[in-house]
Amino acid sequence: QKEVEQDPGPLSVPEGAIVSLNCTYSNSAFQYFMWYRQYSRKGPELLMYTYSSGNKEDGRFTAQVDKSSKYISLFIRDSQPSDSATYLCAMSGNTNAGKSTFGDGTTLTVKP
Amino acid sequence: EAQVTQNPRYLITVTGKKLTVTCSQNMNHEYMSWYRQDPGLGLRQIYYSMNVEVTDKGDVPEGYKVSRKEKRNFPLILESPSPNQTSLYFCASSLNSGGGAYEQYFGPGTRLTVT
Image 1: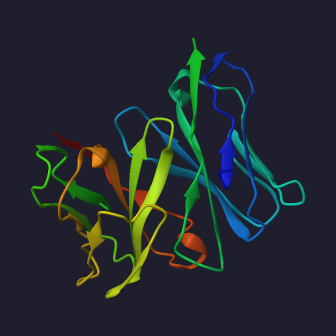
Image 2: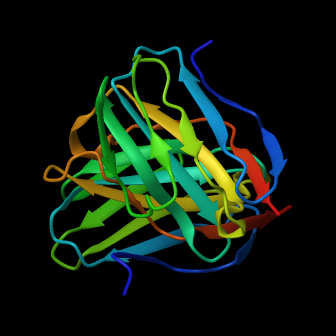
């Protein structure tokens, strides 16, 4: 079983919709939780990271971490066609620092 | 411009012919890492380096070598490539070496095909 499982998608929504992207994990040592966005034929780019539990907001994006449930989410409000990309969750811990574990990614399409 | 560069961007080679993919960053980052991305398998970490002369294995290190002699460079070496190493490779760097380098900047990728 993988340490990080990501909702596989693909996901297709109309412009303006609220999007929810989710990952679960099994390693309780994970402390850092990241979301990356990857456009086609490009490298991933960091959207947000959260340390431990809680919420973090940046513009239309909100990241949530629930360590008790080992569940993280990324919400996108007022989704735009430019949000169409693959979203990757990633996790790491303070022990065995240096190792990063990624989800398989969810491909999102926002239709005008 | 702050960036991670990789060369070559595309490479087609034959089984057993040694190759090196270079990675360079101009942000004075301590941490660098290599990943491979395959359909259905996601992004998997090959090797990482917390600083010069400090490297460690990721999840899929078999068949790969790395070295970190300078802070800015982190080449990936395939001594004897095999077809199962056909993949899209990404190099990444981060200022923060703690916590698995939680703010990683990725290069544009190298698409490798081994026939």
